[in-house]
Image (cartoon, rainbow, N blue to C red; front, side):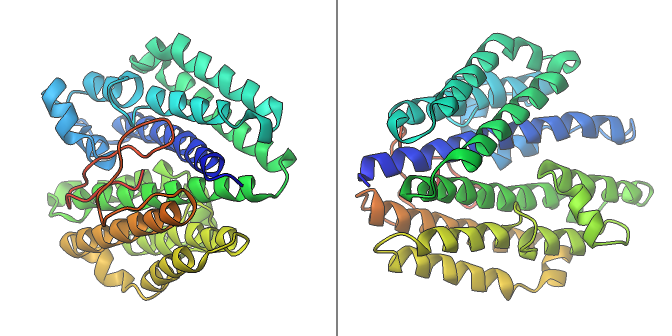
Length: 338
């Protein structure tokens, strides 16, 4: 398979997954406002940190109000990781590979892109936001389901799965890192009960709450949430499950030694994690998540260097474009792996 085609399929899947993840984040944050007591001021700042957009946001918007954050995350075309930017890049990557994917998929991504453009105004107000975002999430899942149901299990399919699962793994570590920071900090005694509500929001950001409750019968706790989202191989958005899928995809591709080694090292790191220690100390969890994100960036670099002809220096990032990742800085000043 031509490296250009492989790269296009990889980035189509990453951008589509990122658009869906962004829609989930904004949905959960909007709903969380209704669950918290009135004395707690809703904080939209973590969403900017999760998507590594703080510098760009502050430069153009200043104060982090709800409307400005939602505008930046959903509708701002100058933000390369906004929902509309990701859908545009996903569509363009799929356009250049139309001859190797079912025609129905091209029709679906066109419809999704058109819906996002025409109905974006609804997302900027609370009244129409929920319906708009649920439509986006449902359409993204429809495209993934269509490709999973009718696409041949060839190299193009495997590169698509590589992109989707690496993006999922990246988002899981980001949500755990940023969302849990406030949860593990000292809270006033009269508000500690709402810590459980916020841990539930961490799960809901990844649509993990019901599957978590099936496995963990007790009340929602930080230790169990961190363990579930890092180590549960049966939940497809958990980090360990994403890494396992990456190994399966790479096993069917040629010249896979270097990327397989990078993924295997990361899997061992996750398996050996001291979950109770991570879940009880914000600083420890933050450092650990930064290490995971660096390792995920290393997995992307290994895949890109092996299959896309990209020779990357550690943490160098790549220029933005149709088939290249969007450079951004995390709290550890590392590059997002796409």
